[in-house]
Image 1 (cartoon, helix red, strand yellow):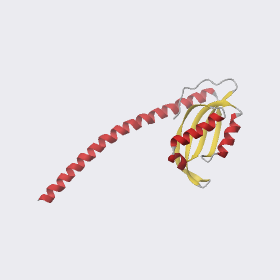
Image 2 (cartoon, rainbow, N blue to C red):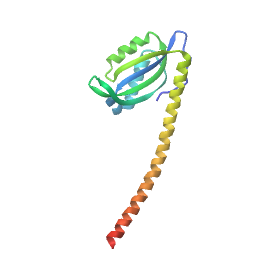
Image 3 (cartoon, one colour):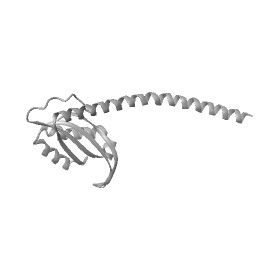
Image 4 (cartoon, rainbow, N blue to C red):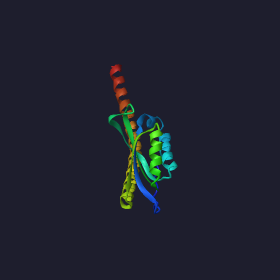
Length: 159
């Protein structure tokens, strides 16, 4: 999703990793809207998002707010420390965010995590584009196999 090179934080800004557990039904219905809503919560608190992406959609260990599935959304950002309380308040009021966790990181770990997230996102895009070309190759092979099956069936019926 949103990726940018990590800008150096000012002396008063902290580097954070945010893991947000989102309602997977709402995310599936409108992924772009859910992403923009979450990033809006962060920006409203004064955060400058460096990298973010959906991480894992899966079954929860126990129901949260009646939901059995959730989408984990990973973000890396920098902001003033006071913004954390505003993020917590906004997440509690949001019907999209079921749980959240913020972790303060040192610069070296933050840079390594952002780089890994960006590399992972780039590799997923490359795999998806190669799958698209493979799907078109396999669909043409499937259609030719179907055509030969139909001609064999016609030959049997004609006998």
